[in-house]
Length: 145
Image 1 (tube, rainbow, N blue to C red):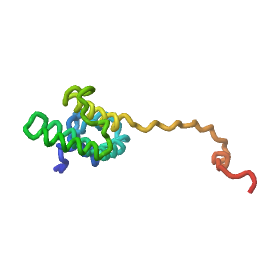
Image 2 (cartoon, helix red, strand yellow):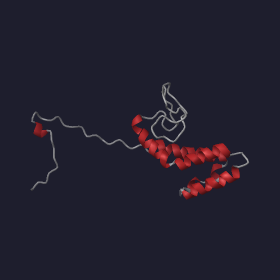
Image 3 (cartoon, one colour):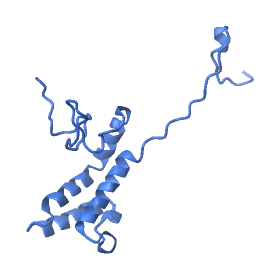
Image 4 (cartoon, rainbow, N blue to C red):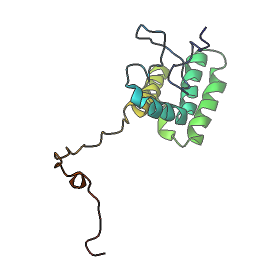
């Protein structure tokens, strides 16, 4: 019997809900789905760093259009300012409406989680070593000892 929580993303430690599966038993959030497993830890760390913004997005989805929206909106504004991201506040001129604002916030999370993939390090091809094992080892030693 599996004790996996199917509502949570299968990537270890991910704070997001599972939304997609590739046909197997594991379900993943939109940020982990379709990515290489070698990137999962980095994505999860970024999502944990932005967990406050994930909560803001959940709040917008849950409360927009309800009688509590004005109160929740004020709390969301405070949260964004406290996290020193005033650039993410609702801007009626650029966002136009709350739906576009939510899309901008979710795009920001997506770019932060997926877009900041570490560049791969260039691998210098090794020269074929001679038969002498000492020639295979290279040490950075000073010229004069």
